[in-house]
Length: 325
Figure 1 (tube, helix red, strand yellow):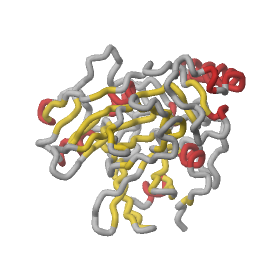
Figure 2 (cartoon, helix red, strand yellow):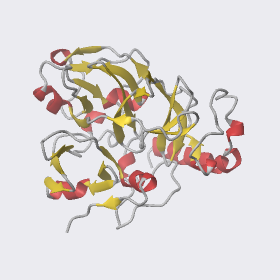
Figure 3 (cartoon, one colour):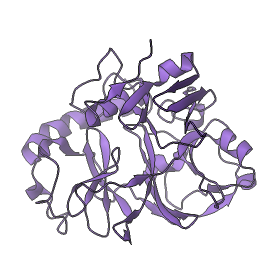
Figure 4 (cartoon, one colour):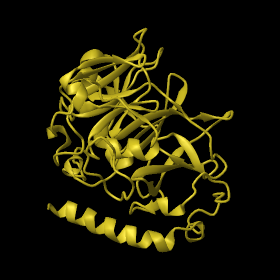
């Protein structure tokens, strides 16, 4: 087992052992004095555990700098980026090499305040509209996990949010849903070739090993990190990627065999050329996991996620598995 995997395994064992004793808001009030723990949708506090870093230990970014696509020389062709293309705004690419280390970027695109998010442990890359109840929220990383998925928080109300769901789970914003934007993850070459006049997020001014993957071979693991819930049904491996649209999930392995599938009112397509961000140490050298696009009958992009099967089953236990056949 590589050194990092040993560290992750040891950390997971210690954290799971400690969680039973510390699964109470009373242990968190010093760090979170302004969070209303009395208002929550969490029924079992043991579901919430520390991922290791404290509040803001993973520093979210706000209003990052951008450079023209033609100026970018650091990204490899196959490196994954989250593409944000909003009508009336210059298309923007948010490289996963930066999101791996920051997980949230608060930005404004075409006048819309957005949060571009990436949870490495679930492979979940989602973009949300930050406008809520007449105000604008700014998101940070809580340092907490639930079913291995990042728990975000907003700085305005100190409420906790489940990233995979885009839903408030603790505090004033409990039960509030963020609007998911129709963005997607693709290779840098795909974004660059389609948007030669586009913008790409510049390298942040933080001392991080940008371009390297701290979760080497994670998506080849048998067991998700810090996860003790049920495994997915139908013999699907827990870290197999699935495409989630609403409460339905299509295994990416199925799309590799049939690259275009039209079902349930959407068309899903798969094309090769995007590197996994959770495989090799150098993100750009990861194995090819391909790019997924999801469109409706009018050809419009549809909000979706490409996440690990265990996470879909954890948050949509009654969801529908689109297995074909």
